[in-house]
Image (cartoon, rainbow, N blue to C red):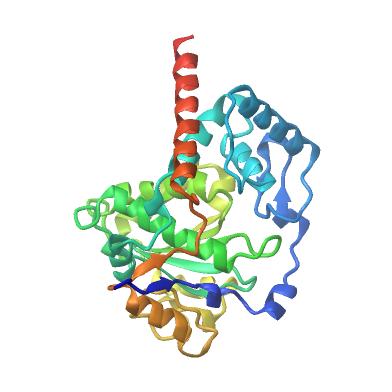
Length: 339
């Protein structure tokens, strides 16, 4: 007997159109500073400046020279993000692209595998609410992070899958292309702080979700973390520090400068009860938080095949093509290292 197929449709996460229509970005939000110091938050349906176009052309020349075939769904915004990730330097582009294509070639980064779902059910990472510009809020509970329970590969797979859902269904090109990240440290001391797991999450986001971070809140720090943070802040890049804010519980009211109280859990000073069910992602703006369709689909996952609604290599042939591109890049890199 053929198994029933289940479609995971996360379109219910999309914000209401009237809210999207009301979003107007200041030009300095879309892009600020010039040339190699440029910082960009909006990548689609906006013009690029002359320097960006020049560097994009340089990137494509390197791709053509090395006979690398980019994925069929590749867009100009993808090229520009690779340019930014490569810090506008030709010598960095192949390394950045190799990392990204390798990530694209791993099916588990895009699928609700049993282990990915088990990870997401734990509440290690989840979404809740939106800020005043309809940017989705992603929350990470560091107290639950445990690389012995879920290994490094699972963290990459599950976070990639989850971030992909949010990007595809919560972002609107030209309007909403960023998220707000709340990292709850739960007063973990430095000896218990999951630095390696954070490094994994950061590395996954930097290249494969380039330009998506708008703001990072580090909440509930221990005294040792607060002290260390002051030392780091004193020497860190000002532009990086502008995106990061560390807050103690008695300072949580500052979060509401960006996020309305009706979009925040009570544990962070908001007016909404703390979430206890973390999978599937919740949309607190619709009755019950979920559609009946997604709840039935998730319930059926234990016994049914899954049809993925996500951006994945369309076939085994496509995956082999990606692997061939990666091999070309690696050969080129080794040749350059020998020079």
